[in-house]
Image: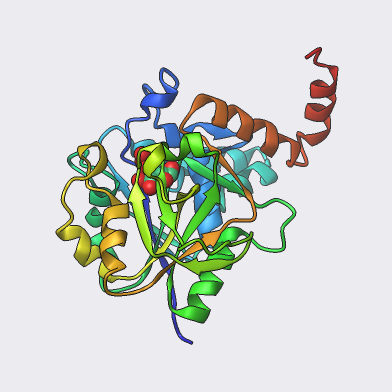
Length: 296
Ligand code: G1P
């Protein structure tokens, strides 16, 4: 099959209110997890899954994100002069040369669906990925990342893939929730979605399988988003456009194998730093020793 997905939308226009005051003057996406900003982890995940064109949906005050992926001539010249080759490479080669990043503006905070729609002129009539930058999907030690597995399933089936994970039932009202008609899916598997709903009341949720920020979507979603009315929280919801799509085509829930860290909240962000720190060759040993010594 020739289904390809080479474009990804990453909405970065959020206010970062859950991690204030840290995110007052810097975008929350620029907060580091070990030695890279969260957004770099997310973009590297997209690139590893074959994405070539990344569209950031951004707003004023967030230029640091674009700058991070741009060339910093002065810094590079200085590192070169000092012979600091390893550091130079880490700032020079953030992205492979065949990957491009562009940015569009979201001028009003009307919701995730609206943010994705802002990228429509660049996405055009192509199937596309969406990655929510708060969510780090850790696939350390797995044969492939969950996003790569989703792309593969999409290539084999032609069917849009929505990453899901089970959460405790009392938390389902924070997320988009999918209904796979009771079909049990295990890690790495996909199943057709019969229904989905954004932030349902707990007693109305169709399951505990929640959408966790990675999507491979048909181009048609952009058309549907143009007509999507405000939904949960008064916002234009991507989930509602996907739910409309179910009237005309299939979407599948992909059960992740890795682990999610929500860096948009303080606890998730701290956990990500501990886990990624324990997986990083420069910090693993000393961090492990430090944790063992803690009297907790
Ligand atoms: C968004 C989506 C929701 C998804 C969540 C994952 O909600 O609308 O379906 O479950 O991201 O984090 P938000 O967190 O922006 O309210």
